[in-house]
Every structure is written in structure tokens, then in C-alpha cells.
Length: 365
Image (cartoon, rainbow, N blue to C red; front, side, top):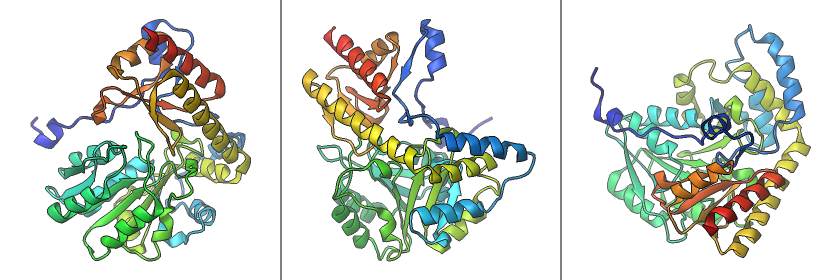
């Protein structure tokens, strides 16, 4: 059966290598995975208890409106519940926004080395992707993005802040001035993806939710996969103007957020100690990585997320493969055009130490 050239040439998203697969292939009994930006703290005990209780009702359909969760999340972020909807992970949110606002052969604009889901979802929808080059320090180049917007009239502009896989960020001044410059483009939606918002330490970084009262062409994405530790439950949040959410709710599946996800997220929002512990673990882990990498002479980009991008100055895939033999899974990012870079997620202190020791061993060869 013939498919469109867009689908024929589509390069699918490739997740981090699973632990069990690595054990099986290499005959290892112990493997440390620091490849997928997961929360190494594990699951909040409050979440486990809430899901266990909710499991008694999984013969019922979940609440399609996510009523309790909507009001809980809105309160947590000090936002109106009318500006909030949910997706089966932030990937579904991205996919649906493209399906809603783009026709085949329309354009979206983003940056090279931005989160790959924008490109995958757009290509699958027969939408063209226009990518601006990054700055020399691997940040979004908003001037180049402006130029692409003028040239290609995109329906959506995707900005990841902080960005994955670079960990770099735009300041509040930079981002807000860009949004202001695009305010008259009523047929162009600016989507700001803040998946790593809770890990940001930079004082000049923005909270894009502050834009929503002033700009109707802005949407903000958050996720429960990172600081909340719910990656396996798949839950993303979309904050936007009510008109955008009206279209979104017309298109999304009625039960896209299952009952266990809703119960788990409600409990996660209540566990303030877990959230603080998650942040502290990531921040101390990053500081540990920075010190060790400096001592090793390995270049890195300071990160506002829960990972750090490093330059091994050689073919990163070969380094990745050597690390696998030592039971360490990192993430090569050659699919983003970075042949010598690896992404290293923060784990527990013990996992971080194992990863650094393995890196020392491999890079000495």
C-alpha cells in the first residue's frame, strides 16, 4: 500500500535504550540508565497510594473533563481553570495543536536542535518544518526565527525553554520581546514548551504563563513527566486562551487522560516534599557533574533542565557504545546534528558517580 512521501521519509522518534534490553544484549546484571531525563528519585509514595486506591475503579471510564485535576493544577500554577486542558503526555498536546491549526503544506517554525517531537509530529501531518540555526552557544536564535516567520508565514512557532537536548534557555526579556514582536500575527500561534520549568535556577528566566493574559496567540505546555516523576502515566498540560482550548477539546479523544493518571497527578501536586527533593537532587547532581567534567577537561553547556550536554571531542556514538559495555546508558544526540555530543541525565548520587567513572574510563582509551 502506498503512503505519502512525508510518511515514507519520516524518521521516527527514538527513545532512550531500555535497561532490560541492554542487560539482555550485553549479558549485564546491573545497568544504570541516564539517557531519558527521567526522575531518578522514583515515585512519590503518595502517588503510589493514590493509584492503588484508584485501581479499584478502573472498570469505569475516566472523567473526560479532568475536573478535579483541572482545578488542582490551575491552583498550583495560579492560573484560571478556563485556560487549561490536558493531553496524553505533552507529545499528544504538540501533535493535536499541529493537527488543529495546520493544513497540509503549511509551515511551522522552530530551531535546529529543538525537541524533535515538533518535527516528527509536523512531518506526519504533511506540514513543512522550517528550522532556524542555533546561536554559537546553542541557544534559540530569535532574530533568525523572526526572519523565518516573515518569509514562511508559519501557523505555529515552537520554542522550547529550556530546550532539550541543549539545556539552554532564553531570558524573560528575550522571550517576551519576541512575543511582543509577533502580537499582530493573528494567524500564528506561539507555543512555548516549558517541560523543564521546575528545574530552572537562572534568575532571569521567564515564566511563560505570565504571557497568557496579554497575548491570545500564545500557548504554554507543561509536563508531569519530569519534576513530578510521572513519565509512565503520560500527562501533559496545555495553558492557552479559551478559544484555542475550545478547538483543542473538539479534537482530543474524550478519555485521553486515564483515571490512574488523574489520580496520580492529584497526589503528586500534594507531595511538596517530593517536589523539593526532586529539585534538590537535580541541582546537586548538576553541580557534581560540572565539577567532575571540569576536572576531566570535558566541555559542557550549563543546563536549566535535569540533564547536561557534554562534548566528548570524538564520535559520540562510539563512546556511547563503550559506555554500554560498562552498564551505563547515556544519550547520543547525533540525530540533532551533534556528532561529538552526549546528553547525560541526572540520576541518584550513586548513579551519577558510576556514570562519571565510566566516562573517565572510556575517554582515557
